[in-house]
Length: 236
Image (cartoon, rainbow, N blue to C red; front, side, top):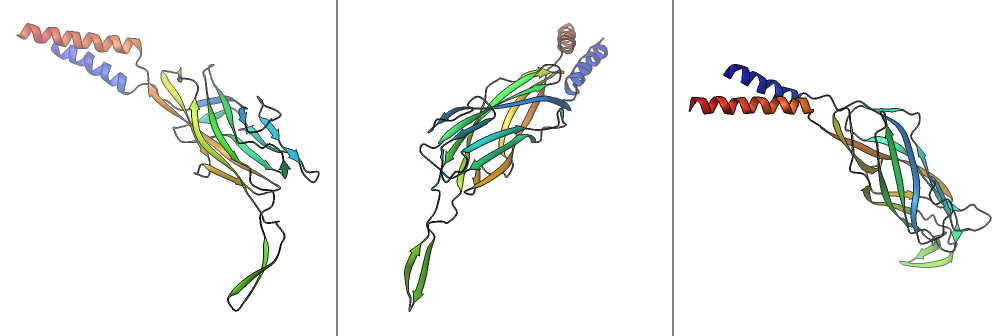
């Protein structure tokens, strides 16, 4: 009797330890939208492309674009970072009010109808269109500025401030998954774009998983523990 109960308990514990593997998981849809802009009136709020500023010298506006990863579905094989999509910054010569921050809300849909979402919070530093670029001459240890063309390169800076997970996670295939937004692929929280340039970087995320014990396994474990307790009581 004791051996049987121990066998039941051992089997239940083994079942708990060897639950269905968390990966792979198929990511079927990715949607991104820019929201909550500050510092400037933007066009395209609520979509994957925003623009702001009054163009100088017949240039275009500054802006952000988000292009979701393609092709989908994307098979996620482990808990390592994967590419959500490409973040593009357009740094154009503009004047007037400029962007100081914006959120990128991302929604992920998985095989079987599971879904989760979160948001990247970005701050934006709009630098002068032209930096000081003086022409100097130095004689006998003294330097003199002859003229300043003010055409030096100036990078605008996008900073990944924080991530906010909007959902508590999702359950699929006996696992509980939670989304984690990593940020830029370059491993830093800053992204620089030169004046009159367009620059892109991948945005990364990852899935963390933990097992959900099946009701049958929990019942089996409970039966085994109850039986062991009963056997112990009889011996006493």
